[in-house]
Length: 475
Image (cartoon, rainbow, N blue to C red):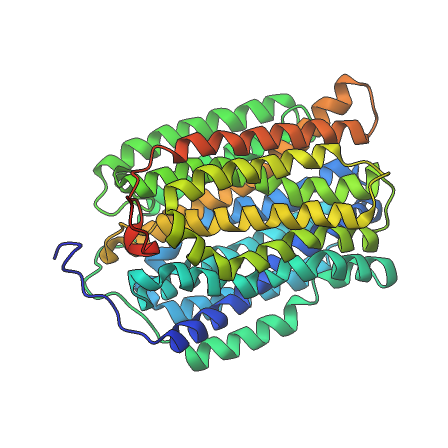
């Protein structure tokens, strides 16, 4: 059956929204956890007697775990059913959250975050897969917006809630919030989400590919995380790079001959998917650095309290949420290529503006800049996430969600690593024991430039790219 002959699923707008909102409850929990922990990092560093910049490992360990296990998510969902996998993922994530709150040391926290990552690796792509299989292509942009709108409440509530908990209770309780959310999500998925399986998907899990791809991503990220930071001996860091690069080369060779590779590189032959992967990854690297850099700058550079820091940084997520209902009309009017190019330039510029933040800036002005930046970043994410699947045959949708989600999480992890490396290098060259406000200025300029590089890459898209999704008529 050709792409044109594929039968589009028929689902009402109300049912599409209801399904998206239930799936979004798990994503809300995941995003709340990811943002609430950033506000608590300085307090956790004091509790564990660790340098604050070393606490980035608490973020990257989770994201590396996501990157390692996400490639298997499509096969697992097809093999055992999306509902069963989604519910199990919620339980594993919730259990990992409990263990994080009980962690006696940074090493224990990292181990618990890896368990969380195993659950999160199934929640995000499997939830997205359920939704993509349930809606028509014309509904994809709206479905993605409804999926991410509740999920964006996590970044809105996370920073101020984290600041409140850290200031008046204990950082350990920031992880306890996931328990009631996880229980409710588990029940709702069991009651309302259908058990979707794909008939005719044969073959077993590409275990060799999973090991090679996971080893490549984990070892390279460990090398980047530890290089020049004296966390482990330099020889171990260089060894990590060597193992990671070797495993990556072996995986590429393996994927060319495997019948069903765990990461299907042939999907990169689809122009819209490949462009979203490349340009979108650069943008995500830049955006991934923001939740790490902003709370540290406000608390350690400016001396703000965790609560005050959280009340400022939540504005970016509020802007992102505000944009979601407007995304489809904007894409319908201007088209994907125009939006991804010019909105990408604006989004990169708003990241660079953060380099000019000083203690003298009024909080409302900071909020306004972050809110506007959140608007542009939200529109860019919606456009990248929708057009990536616009030309994917439905039979290959699970492979595409696994591949795309893996690179998505890897890019966000890279953002944290890049932000931490810039601060380490800047403070080291200037002989600062800890990063100062001027070091954060350099970090924001660099990540803003990384985001800007993605804009001209998006210009390579055809003028009518994604027209079936947006309804835009070129010319």
